[in-house]
Image 1 (tube, helix red, strand yellow):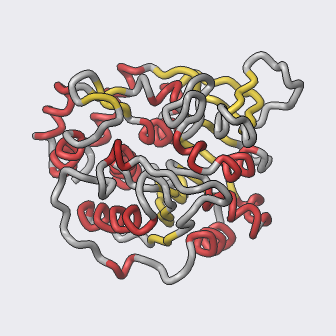
Image 2 (cartoon, one colour):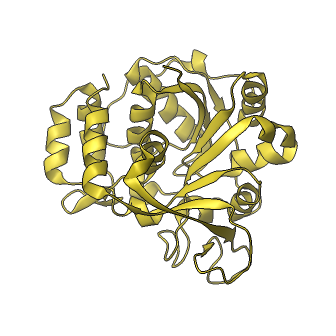
Length: 306
C-alpha cells in the first residue's frame, strides 16, 4: 500500500497527543516531518512535549521548531485547558533530543516538500504561523502540496472569543494567508470538534487498552476541553479522521475569510454558507460529523498504538 506522505504542524497539547498517536501508528500515513508552533503553550514547551511523545511512542521522526510568536498579534495560550506544561497528568520519560533538527521549521518543511517525489499533505493542528511563513518565504512549495487539512475555525461561535476559534484567534493574519493560498483546504473546526466526544466509559476502556490508552487516560484527567464527566472534545483528531476516513463528515465547499479588524470579532472565520460575498469556494468546510462512528473509529485506531 502506498502511504500518504504528510507533514504535521502541531502545538501539543492534550488533544494533539491523541491525534498524533493515531497518525503515527497509521499504516496509511508516512509522517515525514513534525514541526512545532507556539500555541497551546510556549514553543519551548510544545517542542519538549513533542519530543517526549515520540520517545513514548518509540518513533524516530525529525522534529523542527518553528515560530515562537504569531506574525503580528500578541501571543495567547491555552494552559488553562491543557495545564501549565501543555500535557499535565502523565509522567513521561526525558526525550531524545537528537530528533530535533538544527534548522527552523519553515526551512525544514521547504526541503522536505521540494525533495519529495509525491505531493505532500499538510496537517496543521495548531495556529497557522509556520504555514503562512512557508508560503510567504517559499511560494514555490505550493506546486508540491496536495492539500491542507487543518483543525481550526468555526461556522458560528468561538471558543477563544465570542466568535473566534483558538487556532485562528492565536494568529489570524497567518490564517488569512493560508486560506487565501489557492491550495485545496479542508477545515475541521468547532462544528465537528464539539461533537467528537469521549465519555467517561470510553476513558475507562482506554485506561486498560494499552500503554498509549493509559497515557491518554491520565492526560484526560487534566484536560479541560469539555468535561471528563460530560464528554471531552477531540478537536485535533477530527483533522486526522478526515484525512483517513472522510466519509465520517458532512462537508460544504464555500468561501472562507478571516476577520482581522473587528473589535469584537477578530480571528473569526467568516464562512459564507449562503454565497452573500459572491466569491468562489476556497475551502471544504466540515459542518457535521457522525459522532458515534467517529468514536468507534477513534477507539479502534488507538487500539493499534503501542
